[in-house]
Amino acid sequence: MTTGFQKALDRVTRVRGVRGAMLVAGDDGLVVAESLMEGVRGNALAALAASLAKRFRRASETAACGLPQFIHLQASQGSLLAAPAPSGMLLVVVAEADINVGLARLEMLKAGEAIA
Amino acid sequence: MTDDVRALSAELARDPGSLVFVALGEALRVRGRLDAAAKVALAGLEHHPNLADGHDLYARIVADAGDVERAADEWSIALALDPHHAGAHKGLGFANFQRGDLDAALEHLELALAADPTDQSTVQALHAVRQAAQQAASDPGAGASVERPAVFAGLEGADSGLLLVDPQGRVLAGGLRAQGGPDVAEEVAAYLAGVSQEADRSARLLELGEWRWIMAEGDAGHLHLSAPSASALLLLVRDKSVPSGRLAILAARAAEVARRWLEGQTL
Image 1 (cartoon, rainbow over the protein chains, first blue to last red):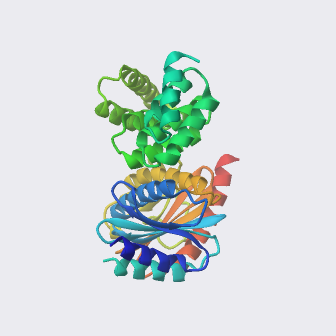
Image 2 (image 1 turned 120 degrees about the vertical axis):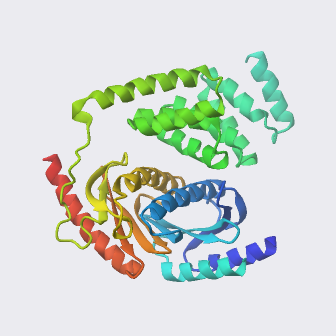
Image 3 (image 1 turned 180 degrees about the vertical axis):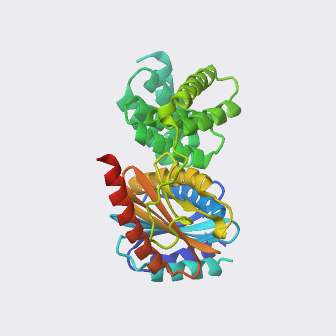
């Protein structure tokens, strides 16, 4: 199964501008599998992405927008993307600021399906 | 070097992967040897990146050094790893009190006390923050206005899908209704305070620079959150039929209106 997770992550990291991808347990923010470039703080990325997704989910559900299927945080020097994955996991990507978000989103959704 | 520090150092030297780094780092911290304590904590976290106690230790060290924001980042990580970590809740209670966010401080201190009811320092901190909150509530100047200014008049969804809030999660202007039904502005505003703090921490820790906006595509609708100024957050909510690219354009227009209004408020 781990190999399946890794293959799914590798597919996402092939998108130009992606610095790393990881599967995170949505409840506690622990790393399930990762494929990160050197220098990316994996445990911090996992914990904070899970926490951010949880908080945004509350706001989204209260506003009757339902469960977020894709979250995109844009910052001046990079992007953080997150999408729910099977079994309560979260697929998280950290990328350059000028990444093709549409392509990354597509590959993230395909990766999520691949590990279902 | 005192005996306990010497003994703990020797134990860590024998086994660099040992959890004894937490006790050694704390022993150094309470003696004011913050540089040495930080080195021990960071080396320990290299071996145990998912140890909540390790992040709590490092947070206390950097808080002692005066960097409360960085400490709050580490306590947030500790809580993400262990949602019932008493030390992390207590630390975030302190950090939020320093920021003036008394509601968040109370919430964290109450959770800290629930996790460890025997900690007298938490009881005392809770008492002090409750007194501060009561004083703030009794100050007539501190009350929020019940009227919401029509800042976004003329924009689509001005009073049902555009919400301007302050960093503490209080509504400044606009309105929000769940699918055109009940008013959920106050509730969503409260959640946004947390979202903003997490975005700040995530961007800073991952060296992404300053965060500019967050967009979430939900099952039934889309949300766009931005910060038109340092003192406000803008949420734009639209149903699923509005494409995300258009959402960004609408958000930029609303942010410009909000920015002008906020500048007028400070003149």
